Image 1 (tube, one colour):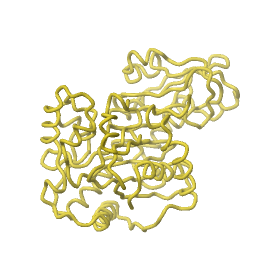
Image 2: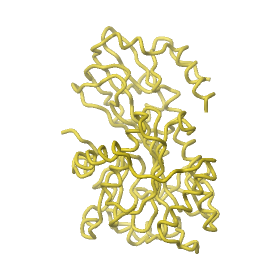
Image 3: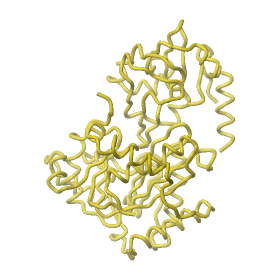
Image 4: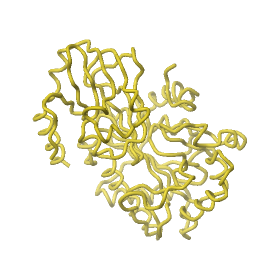
Length: 266
Length: 133
């Protein structure tokens, strides 16, 4: 499914909030973006962490996620959103344990594409660099690497025993465009882009056959089914989820107070 | 297993609360900060705003790129917010039960305290939670 950035975030948060209230079942959404977009983490400072003017000049949508982490350029990626409830759905009660479980699912899916990914080890696997506002600049524990280069970045939000985990699996990676959009200062930009080029990979860079988006979603779905030992049923948003999505879209994700400041009050 | 201060009450959302009259000082437990890892950002309500029992009053982000909503153990009005966190957010990790406090709430319903756990009850709760995984 291809939606605008604001609609994608509204849909994910609607499913998360209704799972938190124990109404929605565990859900996995795979999606692409109708137009190129930059998503920023819930606590990021927009003027410090991305180049707002460059995004606007390129007509790139900007959306603030409910999840943590850093900025992601959604140019050519497959995004996933997993929503679950800790004990009800058999997910761990902590951030790291949930990353580990979902990474196992992604690894199984990537194997179907002939890619052997592994989880980043304890601590950060690569040194911090000035490009740290970009999600892909440094892998965190249990994020996915292929031969030491990050291919998928993830982030979470948790409340009342429920969680939403977002992740971005790169189909192709454009370090120049990523640097242009996510690095607000020109000083040292070339070095930072060189670092991104070295630290990040993609399905295309790894020589994987790139199936159509729908086929890719099905492959990744089978990875989740195999790793979790479950059978996933395809479906659309429920009427409750759809209604909440529309409300969040109107009140939050098209509201500059949220997008620019990260707060709804004042 | 950690030892939790006896003079505090605890919620199942891993929040501690120290009662003085109708004032409640609130923070995250040592167990919570250890599970979160290094805290990198926190969002707290402003003084004079209202909080409600079992509803989020803020959020906290760890270096693991996870945001956890802070669930209020009581209802009432925020009397003060710990400004020291702005200068040194690390105190939430290094001293969660004391100088790393988050907010003080003027409680509106003291009966809500009946829903909270004492130190032994909280200890038993986290043991049970760990065993159920």
